Length: 508
Image (cartoon, rainbow, N blue to C red; front, top):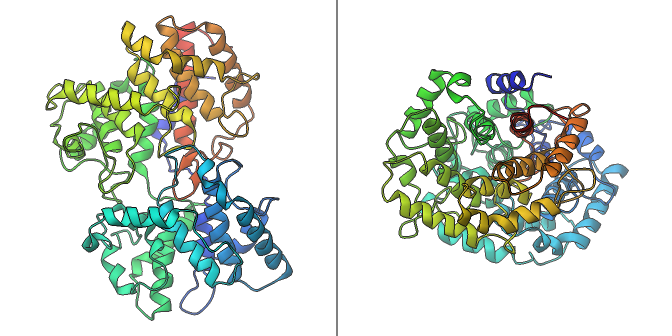
């Protein structure tokens, strides 16, 4: 196979491929048109087919409880609003049993890996479920306190703003908020926060209160459901997809010829955005973030462009010199600060650059779990954050090697017998790719033996022959539910393969 050609093709033919979302499908099943007909009646059978044997709904990663619990909650709520067939009643009963047995396990998940908006959504959905007649615990397992903590961060006048990321999870407001309050929160594309579930909630709210919704909102749902087999979690997400795909190739120690593979038009557009207010996950989303903005600065720096740093400086936490992804967030993101560190290395004009970079390094080292690995708010697996942290921190000098050695040891000893890496049920292609990208950097500095890389590459090559890169990757990314951005994942796999080929001159 010509993996370089595959890499070029993936960059130039991105089409927002993403796994279907059980969470969003359940919301769309709840939505009925003004005529009282279900908007997507076929979603009932689709959801019933995907209930797990233990009564839950959610991704295949059994031990990530946030996802299973919130997907089970909303799916069970949706089931109570359907014709009570024996199959539906059985599904509800099994869901209740699962929630009684597993809701208390929320805090067993890795620290700082809550789903997006979970602390807002979970208490509201629990209350809705009880009102719908589901037999569930009467407490919210500490999430009510976290919901209040989050809401205290948000100025009340901004709660319904399209400029605040809570709009992406606006369904946390429940059924009693006046629908008219949300009209100003509707994006120009008709969505609320580029979220099918939040948009379905808004439409339900309007119809239940005899309010006229924005015409564009139903058109947005039509647009999403025509593109995907059911619905996905986030749409559109073009900037996020392209930036992360290109960044996966860019971390491979210079084997990615950025000026050759990326047209000037793309770099021009990127520079225009960072010279404005920054970059958002999609131009239709319109809320810039430090993560996308950092990756954009980094890629522009690799291309020899050095735009004004003001857009990134906007996200620096005053007095602390590290970066928040969005304003009013409850937890900082490790990966956002990793990306900012990489960008700052290529931004000589950034104010107090050396001091800020040192502050980020200290923050990263202090946030390492058990001095072994990192977790992050955007990905369920520690291998994602750990790989990019190691690449960012390991720069060849003896001090960086010393502080990174425990992490290198963890990666090498965590490799499974089949050559893979995986934090949950089993090894996965994606996690194996991240581990290899990190250890390839370590190998360049003579810190590991080649055998660990060869065994990992054997795993990738064998499974690459059988996997469908547009359907088979596990859902490991953290949205309101777990999801898989297929081309981003596949680009990480290709990047690890290309890097291995560059290191050894051949593949297994």
